[in-house]
Length: 274
Ligand code: NDP
Image (cartoon, rainbow, N blue to C red):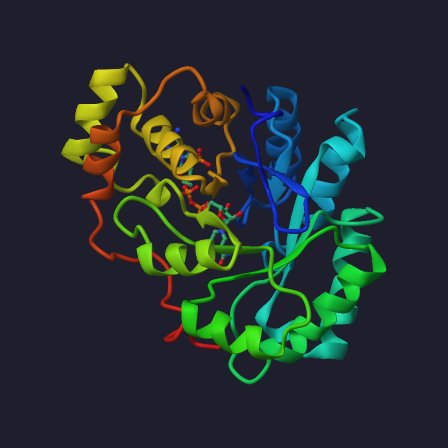
């Protein structure tokens, strides 16, 4: 098992690689280099967004990588000020143009903008039907947003990308998604590298001879959570993906589960300044 063949299956049968590269706000040529090195290392899943303003660089790196398009999984997202039916249709075309691709593998509603996300979802359904997005989903949706969306949705979201790391384990949303066959993706999976010195991570790091980042990525993997750690550095990209040669025990998993403090780094979806 490795980066290329470790996948989860979305409810429409599309396969999503379990570990991908996040490229949040990597600017300028940096994104080209980061994506290029990740693909060279074996990454097949790249997570961008129109908001990151780096879709062109992602697209160029994908093109120059020499890897067949069908082997890659590219996600982008519609930003908050692009929501609503018509705006989303336009935003999608813009993203596709910037990426220089014929289709994306996953298109997400970035945040549940109140009063807008249902219309936005109708656009995503039409984009999905057109074949230009192989899968569609949401991001930062709490169970109440999903509940509301499912009342009118004709196509159920295939994924929900949420802030998720050991100090914010998101049990409630994970359980809701599991019940509805929606794959959970973790953003800021490393907690933005802000608490690698936590005693539990240090203890397990020592036990397994792995870094705290690897312990966390492995925890995601064993929970069936798709994870997209970001790094601009090839060495760290390699480290973050090198998680297929060890296993956390049930007890190890419980120790990490026990780190939860419901502590967010980013905004709460109900308190976001939309
Ligand atoms: P992460 O938890 O992935 O942490 C990234 C930070 O950790 C960077 O500062 C990086 O620095 C550092 N880092 C990475 N690997 C290591 C390592 N092995 N050792 C030490 N430090 C390391 O945070 P992100 O916010 O970037 O989240 C990941 C991805 O999730 C984003 O890139 C984006 O694609 C997505 N996202 C989605 C959101 C949404 O609303 N849907 C919101 C935010 C993010 P360096 O680059 O210098 O290595």
